[in-house]
Image (cartoon, rainbow, N blue to C red; front, side):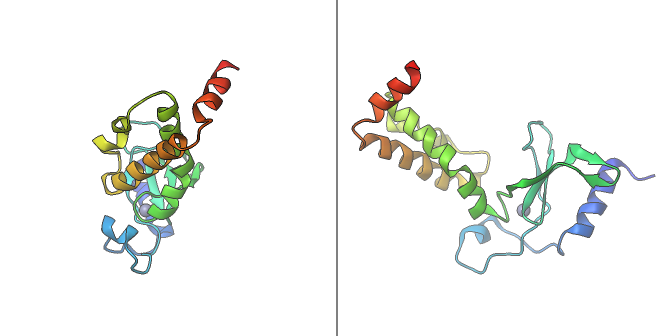
Length: 153
Ligand SMILES: [Zn+2]
C-alpha cells in the first residue's frame, strides 16, 4: 500500500522531466534557462509543512490530491526553476509595499527584505523591487496626498 506522499511523488515523477542538477544561481544568470520542473517542495499554500510542489515550473497544492491527481495549482510560478516569472508575478505587490511604506513615512531602512526573505536566492531582487516602489513614491509629489485620500475613503 502506497502512502499518499509516495503516490504524489510517483505522479509528479511521471509528469516532470527527468530531474536536472539545479542550483539557484542558474535561475538568474544568462545561461539558457534550465528546463522547468525542479520538483522542489516547500510551504506555500498556507501550511507550515511543505504543501507545494513544483511541477513543470508551476506550484501545485499537495493537499489537493484526489483520485490520483492534484486538483489545485498551476498558477504560481516556481521560485526556483521559474524564478524570473515568479519575480514578475510578485513585482507589483512588492513595489506597492515599498510605495505604501514611503507614504506612511517609513524610512528606507524599513525595507523588510533587508532582513532576508523566504527565498534567500531572491532576496536581492525583492529588496530592489521594494526600493523601486519606495523611490517611485518619493519622487512623485502627489503620492502622500493620494494615499491619504485613498485611506480616508
Ligand atoms: Zn521548480
